[in-house]
Length: 379
Image (cartoon, rainbow, N blue to C red):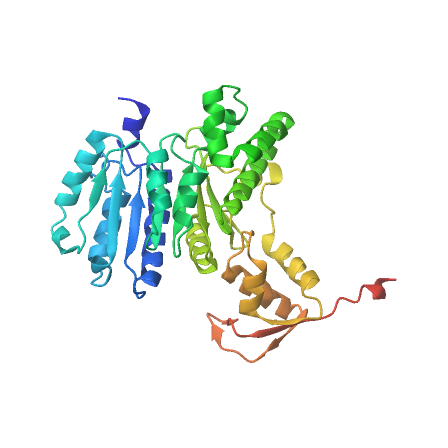
């Protein structure tokens, strides 16, 4: 039994979190899309066997999503499913799992299950089609099959989002590997121009700097294919205190970004002043290497005072304008603004508001006037 087979033997905590992120986002995305006139689709190109071989026969992502759809009278008549895995044994087991769902016949559309190696064949098919709104999940064992072309072939269409497994533990050393076959896969992920640039830049970097630049270039590559909004969720290895992999989310939609951001924040294992780290970290090393500011709400307060000095905006506008590319979710902005109000740094309208759990509320429509920074008074 190889390591790939081992993966479906026991459900790890990191796999539980991955399943939770995928299934929660699909439910939220489908709930937004179900009232549109178009049908919608879920595509999983590395679907696996549908369950783990533990004593509870724990269901994996495809079966959880199928069961959730079957609970919704609208969705079971709108969602089209495409599952693929090149391992014949996996798809055979997946068929058995699907057939064991008692009300599976209530789905309007027949589930499509394929056995192909993910490569140019599927990219060519997706490129020539105008896809219905689709949530694409790419979860390869290594990194073969994960390409910018594949993501772009789906993302080009309206309402389409992608979440993919980024195997940092394998890709990181691959960037410096001179073998042509390895370089080919690295360039397929980053694009040849950025891939070559990355090769040169990582040579003298520390491990932490290397991780940051790899993520930076990956997001730059995704922006080139119209991936306007991206998020990453980091997983530390459960056996070694180092980065194992990431889940990367990419979308053209700000609403999709906000939904996934809230989901990833809630799945994080550490928070500082209520601000999530967007990672699964089984180790007590939250201050290691200062990768995360020890007091992020304090930092946010300073940023808001500087950026919006003398301006008036609603809470919702502040969040919409400022949060892209940060760890902050809307609840963090409301906490920061409540503290600034108590510190007499801002003026709120209305000032009299309801209290929730003994604390003033801070609704989306509350207007915030930032007092003007009069630096000249210091001299």
